[in-house]
Image 1: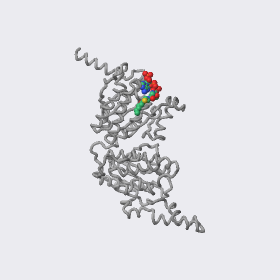
Image 2: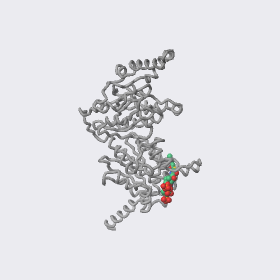
Image 3: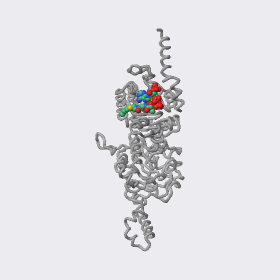
Image 4: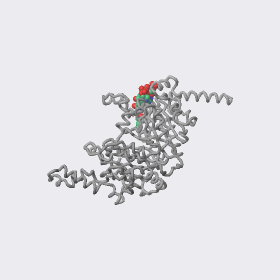
Length: 507
Ligand code: HXC
């Protein structure tokens, strides 16, 4: 054969491969409101930046050899100029299921991502372990899970769920840092509706069992819910824009960093709810905040903002939900986020307006002690720059847990209205002066008086500032400037921890 014949032959093979499972299956994919694997890659990556790896790899199993790429496309490219590595299950080829070769392709691209310290993105659309290949499929998953764990904290790992993902196809995402889902077209479950009905008799459709709504609101397995696949992929690009990439050139604090609106955003009455997102956005560059897991444990907000062009991970009480108290789910959500930021050298900003851990039998029996301890652990363990801003109340154990000075904050700022105390003034007065209040002619009036006295003497920020627990009491409008200056000052922070194999976070 001449070179031209060889090239013609190669082109024919390539065009077969790029057609995935064929025209009929591709259009079935479109009819479901889904893109094909290659369309997803094209949408996600910078134009013409994709280089495919192992396109001609095929299964060793007779009968499966001609399946395009063995049901997965792997490779590397760039997103806004930044290198990323990815795999994309091709549901049109053997249901995107994972066999031996498919698993080897994914493991190989994960290894490359780790060696090159670049983010790894998985576009998941798979029926899980390929039944025909039996135990080698299970073994393949084992190799991927192990890499998910080994590379955790080494490279950011992002999962996008874009179809009905079952079995092993959901454990790998569960081991990654962030999971994005698209409404109505993506689901995650260990066993699907048919198996559940067979085993337990329970009847449920796929979306109610494991759709974006369930995993973003109830289970907490997902971090982002998009209306469409394209929106999910765009959100991945936005997330990446916050992750450190090469040398950053932060801008120093400027006069215009004063934000007068901050003065009015938090009600004086410490029991009045408000939306902390307004405060966060007012602090941020361009009023922009990337909210992670916005529908789960809404009493705590986590996400990324930029302060003088430098990214910070925010952990903020949300007084709009459960008065911003700490719960089991809130502690889980925040701890994992804190550990992500710490692993990838992203400074932390804690915004506290927290009445305490949520009291209740369900929380106690559910293990709030164990879960709440994760938050203490995560903050204390983190060595990145850590700054706390107390914007209203910070009571009891929750004050300590929300990155107090004692737990390791580098700097704590409080607004002049802040109340830092073991508990709210009314509760404290009832305990300290209970007998006096009961014996009084007008118990309500005495209670009010005692509460006011306690509040004046104990719960403002000045006592905490006098003891060094607060570094400075600042006006709300100067917060942004102070924070930018603080992160500039802490930019080269180094903090050692005792040498050990690893700690034992309460899981
Ligand atoms: C082989 C599979 C398959 C599988 C789907 N297919 N799952 N082939 N092994 N696990 C094939 C189908 O036969 C079909 O092929 C094509 O993929 C598309 O599947 P459909 O069922 O037609 O699509 P849909 O109706 O959209 O349903 C998708 C689905 C369903 C929800 C994923 O196929 C399903 O429930 N599959 C089984 C999922 C499952 O239980 N997996 C767990 C495996 S165990 P044709 O040729 O007809 O188009 C596992 C354990 C790992 O993963 C353990 C790690 C710890």
